[in-house]
Image (tube, rainbow, N blue to C red; front, side, top):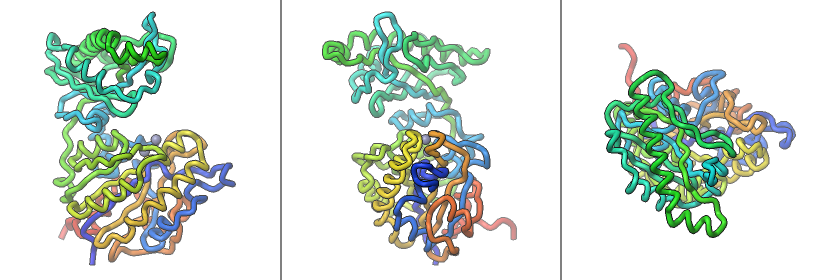
Length: 411
Ligand code: ZN
Ligand code: ZN
């Protein structure tokens, strides 16, 4: 008997290094996590280099690699993936960007790169979409608000390039920069010029928008400009069902991961209350996974909060969130006919507050799958498991083999 379905759970940034606050243990080692440990006991464990030894992965490049899309071929920057995740339909050749609504003072200097942490910018994005006009440049655009101060933008038109600078000065008290091409090419020059016109017109629309006038009168920072970065050209992704022969869904709070799922042809399933932080609606996500597995062969579940705790350097908070994740995973462990794979997309050590290249723990459990003597799910125990050390690019081939979907190499 082999399982026919696959649940891939990516615990974003969950693995770590020894933390002094936890008496030298990692948050995974220190956490009480009976469900993850049970899967480790019943399955086969190992460690995995999400991209390669010594390469510090981004969440985007790692997810692409783990799903079988080598980032050196498929990754063209964060912009197009964020744009997809925010709800823009990206076609190959379109240029995508990430944006922040921000605050300029009367002298045109950036005084808040997040516009007072504004919650809702839909009305502002709608006003820009109605009033800003780039037709003189032969460019159409799509601007969508994301969570909080975030938004995404896409340009479509002939002869546009993606090799352009950002207008984000990355600090406050100075004016935004002008966009410029980063190499001597007419296509990149055209994009930079269109961006400069776009921001000029956008500032005029935002400056007199009623929402900003009322924010000003309430003493709140107006969202009166856009800082734009992460330019990338949307590429062509062979659809996941064709590449691996599996229909699939993605459940993730982070727009970046939603965008990756959409780019490769996984069905995106929204979950109310999924925030990507440690206050996320874990129960709702788990419920959505169970529903999806009724009709799909492959479900990707990303749980983000532990990464955030790592970036904040909060080891105890990270450990506590791991315990919360563990408690919520119960309903996913007993699903029949399903290969359960649990891993991370990278380590986010509290000691360095960013991603590191340390390999991540992985466990695979399913009918007919070999087991080993590992009894707890953490960085150290899994290193002694039967999977040894896998490269991230091997994950999908290993999964396909274990569910009997791999083709024989040779006779
Ligand atoms: Zn990540
Ligand atoms: Zn991160």
